[in-house]
Length: 165
Image (cartoon, rainbow, N blue to C red):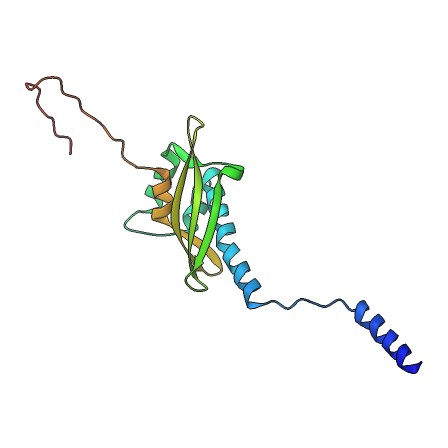
């Protein structure tokens, strides 16, 4: 009888204390993988909302592009990230280490006419002072070419080619 009472008390005590799940290496790694995705979504939102100064601060400079030229290029671009569910799809993160990762994703890019184009690409992300940043060249490539392409059509052999450098 005494053994049953002790067993009963142990069962009651074990049920009243909820076990706290320990963070496993896998769950920590999964959280780390979602951080770059959330950060990239925030970066796309900054661009869509026209917050180019803040967007510039979330990029890793590449080449000789200045802050002013970066802002001018994005603000004059006829493209911007799409909204809502079209913005980012099929996101997968490959971690290189705690501070660097590569995001493989399909990004929806909206034109001025309202049409949406989907671009599947890899994006390089790097964490600096606790903030995930994306490569500036990855953002400018989504914005499209900074130069307008012109085509020349010639109808006869007598027309001269004019060089525009």
